[in-house]
Image (cartoon, rainbow, N blue to C red; front, side):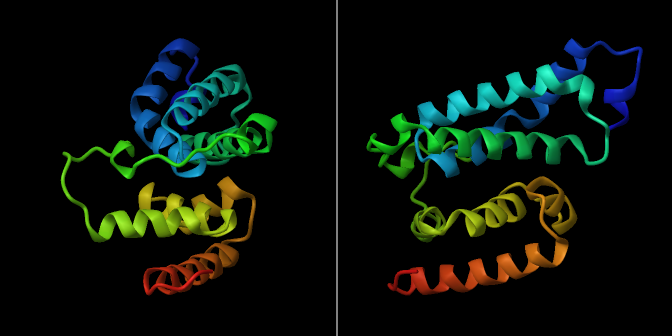
Length: 171
């Protein structure tokens, strides 16, 4: 946060550091929302473009990751509302999921990923931000513009729904 306000560092340097630090996190989040590698890449680029354009308005009320995740989530939501997104088949194999681990047989992890993708958006968001992005409840609340207790309730409900899905039921 302090780096963004430091007058000795150019916007380009700040932006380059943010991209290097958060590029994979933003891509993963976008992929989990959009379920399409190419659309996730587009959303990632759009997220960083929006962040660069708005860098001068960043007030430091949250950390950079929270700010970027908020932009990424809004970008993905905008893409989902587009006519193109509604008429394209986005089902692709999970082996194309951008993970930072070597290709292996994930077994239960594949089932969990599929289950997370089936969750309604409000539950998927908190699961992705908390467990995949290691964000605190307070950071998630700031990113999603909801109350901290709501984050806890949604995570608890999401875990319950995941249990139902993984046991063979549907939400």
